Amino acid sequence: MDYEHMLNGAGLDAIVIATSVKYHYAMARQSLLAGKHTFIEKPMASSSAECEELIEIAESKGVVLMIGHTFLYSAPVRKIKEIILSGDVGEIRYISARRLNLGLFQKDINVAWDLAPHDISIILELMDEFPIRINCQGNAHITPGIEDVTSMSLTFPNNRFATIQNSWLDPRKVREMTIVGSKRMVVYDDVASLEKLRVYDSRVDVPPHYDTFAEFQYAYHYGDMYVPYIKQEEPLKIECQHFLDCIRQGLTPLTNGEQGLKLVKILEAASASLKRNGASVNLNLAARDTSETPAWAPAPAPAPQLNRAHFLIRTTGKTRVGVPHED
Ligand SMILES: NC(=O)c1ccc[n+]([C@@H]2O[C@H](COP(=O)([O-])OP(=O)(O)OC[C@H]3O[C@@H](n4cnc5c(N)ncnc54)[C@H](O)[C@@H]3O)[C@@H](O)[C@H]2O)c1
Image 1 (cartoon, rainbow, N blue to C red):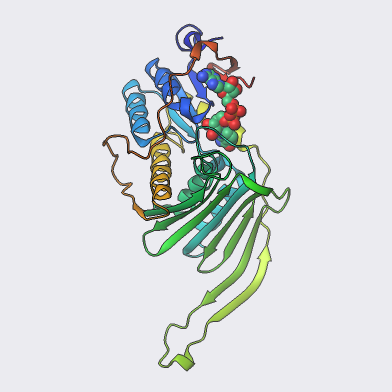
Image 2: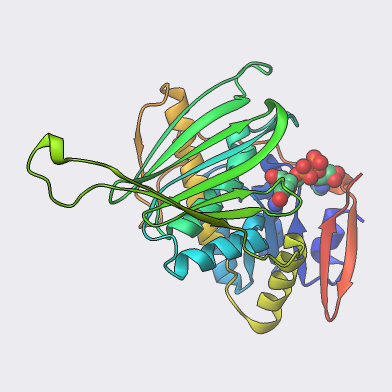
């Protein structure tokens, strides 16, 4: 079935855009303008200006716009959030994330745009706050101009920060995150088949009062480690169900267009910093930016050959959802 038929002839209520990132904007725009509830895979689009336009169209059409920040629907991330909300971790001091593997090399986006959306979405959820500054360094070893290794840091208010390492040039598949709190530390290893989370009763305290340097002593605390129970559930299934629930019940998705926009703004800032060898790029995520597309945004892609695309239509209850079909 061609895309034109999906938009206008197939009687669909909703469409899932899971194509290369360079096609997200054009396809999602057509879908929203046709009045379809639209799910877009991460990252939402190639620039914040495109994201803003998609949000506005979705609002004007009164349809659901949801972004595929899949890890926010995963049981380990939900569990970490629960542990943080319980107060067990204390104040989060910093988060470090590593998402590395060999390939898959992309031609339209660098490794930060490919892999960091997962880490950024998790970090924003856990920090419950937006960064004020981004620094990013990297290198293109294989494809000229497309960085395959990047190291990003996100500075948050109140001296909190996060680092993200992404690579398509690593022999091992690594998906690790360490959340360091004032009371406990959580290590999340998404590659582990069991025991994906470990909570360490470890911390370092500085004495509140001291008069001389000799009195100053760090207090290292080594306590127990425990492995929280996590019910194994497929995040993609939960994510798809949430999309359908939002459509049927008129809810705003947990990962809506605004979340997608904020994430793309961070990626744009990372690209700007990359071009300036890691220089700081300040972010103001409070207000929606209506300025022109920044110069560092990836070049707009030519219009996709929509009539040659193949799609699979899945009927789920009363809602008909079109999903691009893997060739
Ligand atoms: N949320 C997640 O966990 C997750 C994981 C992997 C990829 N992704 C995202 O999913 C998207 C697709 O990634 P992928 O690795 O599956 O890519 P892919 O290249 O393997 O698949 C893209 C699909 O899009 C189809 N397609 C390409 N051009 C098209 C067009 N013009 N019109 C219609 N269909 C077209 C292709 O036939 C193919 O089936 C990307 O946005 C990526 O970032 C998300």
